[in-house]
Length: 395
Ligand code: HEM
Image 1 (cartoon, rainbow, N blue to C red):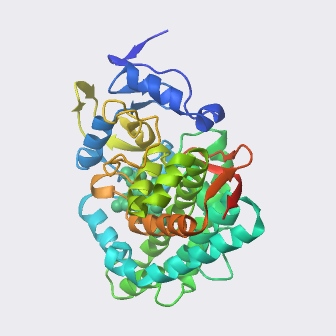
Image 2: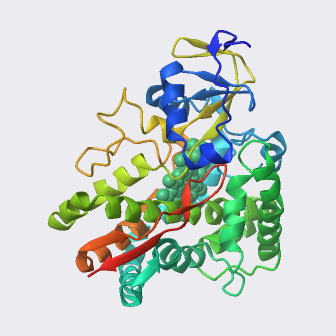
């Protein structure tokens, strides 16, 4: 059995198997030990498990492009054309500028108070309930109350948003049973978004409505509207739900860190960074190498796919002291959980706002977060999140 591929160490275990999705960290540790680049033979991709190489590739968006997709599935890469995520250069800038201003601090300040009020209501309801599911009762409740309105998704058509959003991520993994099962959900979301655009059914004043008006003014084609809506609705739910649910679990299992946050709430924003570093909601996306290039001292041939493993970079012992320790006092700001460079998360301001609002409401009301049973996992090729998280909040 070959141990190298073009001189690059081969990592044979399938990191997209269910057991590896549930517990990926031992795989990431072994991959980081093997080298700056490792070859995954099943997915036929050069994976980057370390921080420095992930950051360098994300910043080199001319050499390692997104325009031919960021998935590990060639059909999905072809189908996902037209989104901000899957575009390069001037086209990417144009698409991003159309809506990203909606997610900048100035725009978000306008909704800050209402997000805080909704977070307080969500936490009060959870406290009154006693035994709760941290995912359904806390982590899902706030993003579902905030994001669909912002994006402009019709109010009577939201029942399927969560499964469709999850499926839209799932299909970005390799071709496996998991992604095949997810395909109908992802297609339904796209089809539905097309209908919303055709029927001009987005909420007045929303991000989606802005996009439609921009198309009316000829700044983009009407065909581009639905991928742009999916661009913002699909990554806005599961990701934030993951971050909030992991925050609950981590503070529940690290009571001393919870006490520290309660004693010093100025640590809130860094606490959010540390949660996203420690349990990165998005595990990995790929890029295509446009030309023969070097990553560190490794030669990568033109046309190859390169996998940026954000979740492994965020645990790289070359970058972080004691990376396996959850510590809200460390400076976690440079983590790659929201990406880096041209494609860095356009919605991170909103994700931070929501996660901080929930934590602040909890800090003000809850002495202990008790994890009352083991969490179960929502198995997904891309998103790492709990399916259920049994909790009790002690006020
Ligand atoms: C904790 C929550 C979130 C995490 C961890 C996260 C993570 C990421 C990451 C890693 C990327 C980079 C993709 C790449 O390198 O190709 C990204 C891009 C993106 N995210 Fe997020 N995200 C979150 C929440 C959100 C929200 C709430 C929205 C929208 C409301 C959003 C919208 C986007 C968009 C539009 C892009 C594409 C940006 C571009 O290609 O220029 N994300 N996100």
